[in-house]
Image (tube, rainbow, N blue to C red):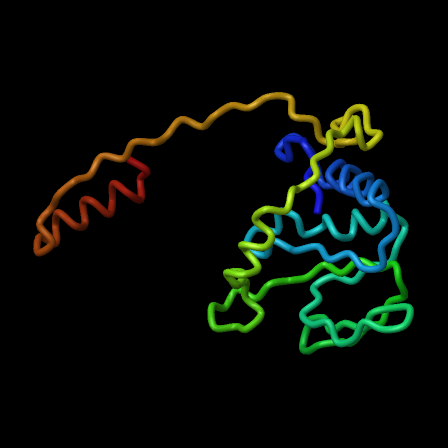
Length: 181
C-alpha cells in the first residue's frame, strides 16, 4: 500500500491519474487494479478510465461482481441499462467498482473485521512525493487551473410568524414570496 503526498483539491482527474500511475509503475508489475467510484456526486467517476488510459491498459467501469480471476485475465459482471453484462479482460486490467447506495445491499461498504484492523494497524504505509515519482509539477497537466476563489455571502432569511388560521395573512405572505421580497 502507498500514499502520495499531494493536495488532491488542486489536481484534476488527469493529474491524479498521472500521480497514481507513477506510483504504480514505481512499485513494479501488477495484474489487476481496482478503483472505487464515488456515486453520490461522481467526484472521481472518471479516475479509473483516466488511470487505465495513462497506463495503457484495458478497463471496465461500474463492475458489480468479480466472477473469475484465472489464467491471463478476469471475468466481471457490470451494470448496464436494463440488466447486467459479463465481460472478460486480459491482464493487466483495471476495474472501476461501483457501490450500491442501498443500506441492505450486500455490496454496500462494511467495516473491516477486528483482527484484520489490528493486523494492518502496525503495517507502515509507504509515502512518496510527486518528485520521488518523477513528476516535477503535478499541476502542470491540469487543464483547469485554479485562478482564485470567491466565497458566496451567506444569505440571511428573517422568519416571520403569522397565524396559520388567518387566510389573508397567508395570502399576503405568499404574494411576498412570489414577488421575491
